[in-house]
Image (cartoon, rainbow, N blue to C red; front, top):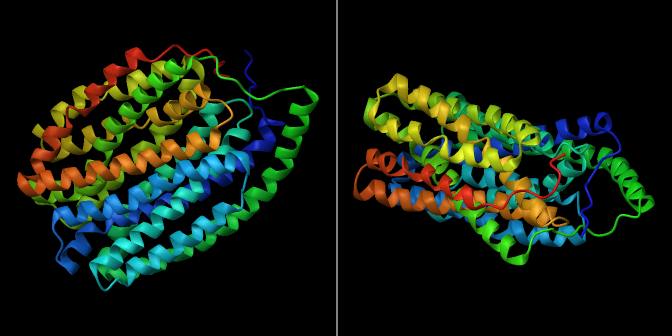
Length: 402
């Protein structure tokens, strides 16, 4: 069995595409991150409880998770780069809807539109990033994810500076970011089209056939199951922060909403560094080792976190997210190498799982917070990284990391 390794015409030609993809990812995830960032505002404005807050997250994230694998599977067979522009149109509509929602069902509808926009964006963007990698898959995914992680971090900060003082309607101002993202997407697709034509020509000249997995079907099923469980542990923990960290800080330490948003920004911003570092290190030492470290390595810090003061809470959350965020690029590339030739489907599946699993966890944790306390949520979540022990059972990679 042989495996066709994706390449691009040159790393130099690919970098503008990767940078543009990272920028659109930043804008996309920045707009998405505004949803949990405005929870304290809409909770007070609409008289919501934690269970209803969790349901908004569930609606947003499950909408994305249900459609992403299907869209990725379809675009594997029928690439549709300009579909990303359509997806951003849904995000634009969702932001406007959330800004002027007069009822709880309209809040859910707006969140669903933003989730649908994400489901269309990620599979095709993942494929383009892989094709533009120049063979450095971890680096390419790291650059792509830096944009997403940075955008996710900016959302709470912008919410603290703009939305908290001016109210829910000011969320509509950010729809301009959706329009800018559409322009960038059109440029990216046109620029990448030339590189893609050269890639196809080289593959044809080299006589490359369809990529075939070197793993047995049973190994693929076991490995995919483990990766999904590991992704759940990572995203359940991250969801506890994106949805409830501000409430935790306000309840336990008595900080202001603005201060809590700034601390949430620090937590999320650390993910950008971790994502890039994890991708680059994974290219050098292997995906398997990064996956093992990035989940289990956070465990000592998550166990300590619920028992420290405000200063050390801020320090530990940054350390935890630096470690845990290094996992995603390696998890997704490992999965792509399990079933080569299905980049869109795997990208959609794993980005979709990130949303879906995070949404399920947010809904469950919201109910736990209502029945016990917000502090109990973080005491319970502290043990989630222990699931990293399952990485021991992953098969050793058989595909070249380069």
